[in-house]
Length: 254
Image: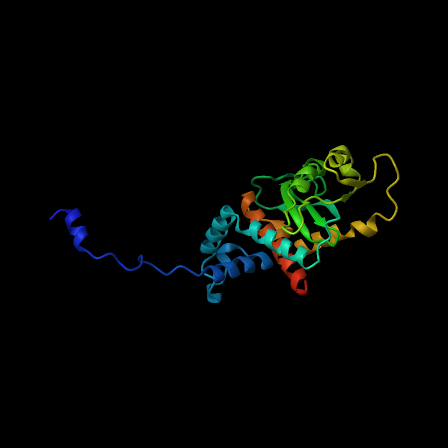
C-alpha cells in the first residue's frame, strides 16, 4: 500500500501532539511579571504557571505585530475621556534617556551618560499626565525631530472629533516647531531661545515628569534590554495601558 493510501486509513488526532498551549491570560501575566520585575525571560519561574519565558516572548511578539497593545491603549484613553478624566485642551512633551544594555536598533551614544549606548523615550501627555503617545529613538536624537510625530500620533477619541490639543507645553528645545504647531491650530506655549523662560512654566509642566516617573517604575523600561525596538515598544504600550487603567479605576500607582 502506498504512503498516500496508508495515510487515508489513519484517523486524524483530535489535537496536535505535544503539551497544551498556555492560555493567553497566563501568558499575559508572565509578560506583566517580566515588565514589573525586569526579569530575564529564561528566569521566569515555571512554578507560577505562566509557561516558559520563550513562550511568553513569542506571544508578546505576536500580539505586538497584531497591534493588540496599541489598540488596548486607545480603548483606555477613550474610556478616560468618557469618564471626564482626560484634559485634551493642553498637552506636554518631553524626553527621557535610558540605558540600552544590548545595543540594537534605535540606540546611540547618550549625551547625558558619558556617551554610553542608550535610547530615548519621547512622551506626550495630557494636562493631567495621562500618557498619549511614546516614541523610542536613539539617545542622540534631538527632541525637536519627534514633536510633530507625537502630536499627529495622539490616539483619537470617539466622543470628540478633535484629536490634537489646543495648546502644547514644552521647553526651549521645542522652539523650532512653533510655526508647524500653529499650522495645526495648536498654541505653542514654549519659551523662545535667547529669551527668559515663561514664568511659572514648571507648575504646569511637572505632569510630564510625573508620567516619566510612572513609566520608569516598571523596571523593564528603566533599562532597555530588547535589541528589537518593536518588542521594547510593546512593553511601553503595555505600561501606558496600565497607567490609564489605574487612573480610570482609581487604583494606587505604588
